[in-house]
Amino acid sequence: MGEFATVLYVLAMVAVMVGMDFALFQHRFRARLIANVCIVLVFGLVYVVFLRRL
Image (cartoon, rainbow, N blue to C red; front, side, top):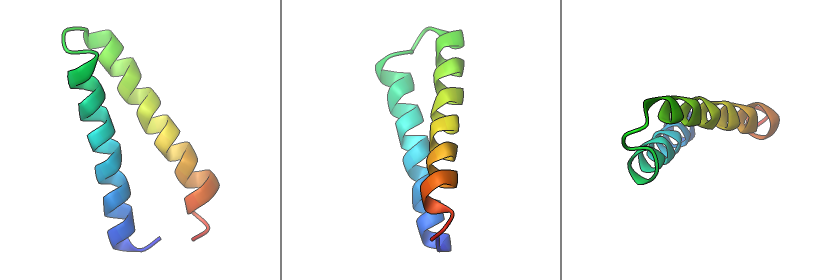
């Protein structure tokens, strides 16, 4: 992946995190933390499995 594509991938991950935080977990700290950790793990897994080879 090129540098620009990596930046877009990270921005997409941040957008998903912020969207989930505001939409579902506004006043629940632990649920937000767990959801954010899971989102990072899923994006990391997708990167390792599919995108690292590019």
